[in-house]
Amino acid sequence: MKILIAPDKFKGSLTAEEVGKTIAKACLAQKPSSQINFQPLADG
Image 1 (cartoon, helix red, strand yellow):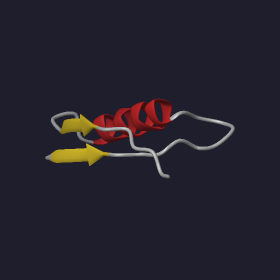
Image 2 (image 1 turned 180 degrees about the vertical axis):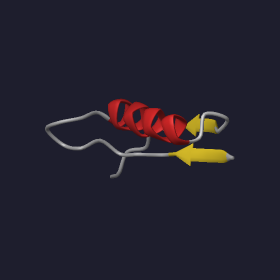
Image 3 (image 1 turned 60 degrees about the vertical axis):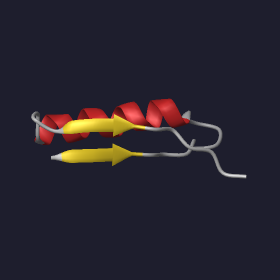
Image 4 (image 1 turned 45 degrees about the vertical axis):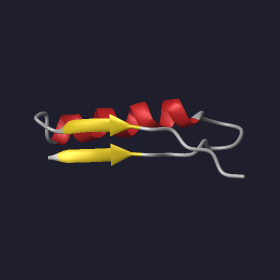
């Protein structure tokens, strides 16, 4: 399975990179064979 993770930051708590890594870790825990593509985004 291919998964694109493209989060924005959570103002005052987590950076976009931290959010993405957390989501990727959870995805891989459920489906270890997944191909994760991570691209942090920003609004504005």
